[in-house]
Length: 351
Ligand code: SF4
Image 1 (tube, rainbow, N blue to C red):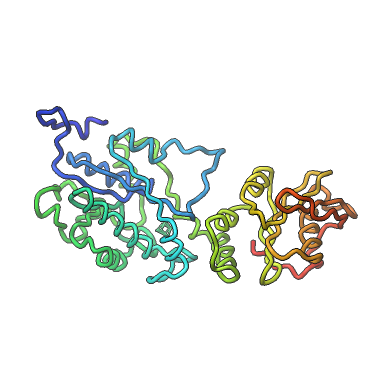
Image 2 (image 1 turned 180 degrees about the vertical axis):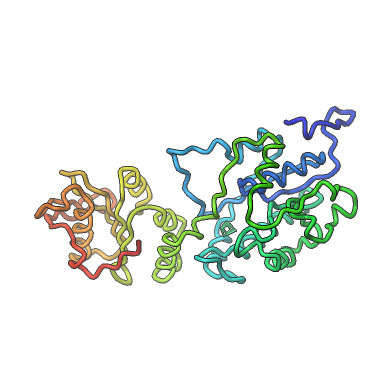
């Protein structure tokens, strides 16, 4: 634990805090700074780190040293990981307050996280909730009227404190009752990052994550694949979402989709994610992608997946190559096919 929170000790040598805040912790710089501003006022913080099925995939070539766990350990606050599960899928399917530029239901998402935080705050007897929001920083969810809407719908009312922009907002309950010193809160506004970076320096925060720009639902390509999935297979599972994160995706017809691995790593992931009813296709004699056929067993579908597999293999310029198609580990077909060309099939590449 840092000396920030250990200044005052009670007679049992336990830290004596002036209040207990629940933080919405995204892992980004703003939410870290909001937490550090509370710790600086000797306020205990329990951070809720929400995860859902549409989180970004970590880049193994660029490992992040400033993970939520490392930051929590370094600065001495408790971290709870909360998976939003099916509840989150439900708001993605039918957001009540619209979407951002793509499939991201940011307002519903914020309301959901704040409601969870409120329930947790009440369960453990904490005093208030904080977020790292800054007025006008994000185009959709952090405009002032959206922030007010989120506040009303969360049910938190004046128990929600936004320490980074608090001075632009009316005083909240913890400020009015003296749990938090309003004078030490900030008045950051807009999209600039200078004040946050200077504050990070003051706190000795050197390894902080770069702004991540939201979850996969803010990504155009991913959103297009998801729209396709919702249109043709609305009762999708978490496994279907994982499959959307990798490969080239092709919509063949209402019932049929093909995913082609783009590299060795994706081939391995596809193999792991494949379900017993998914057909797998590869060309064993050459460097070939692994393809997954999700759809009925028909000669047309087998030929299509075979042609696409060769099209993205090292033999894309060859006349014909052998491919094997299997289901649940059992050989289904062995075919010799030419690589698919753009004109061979009525293929609609989703991405
Ligand atoms: S970007 Fe994703 S995680 Fe962030 S608020 Fe929007 S929907 Fe929620």
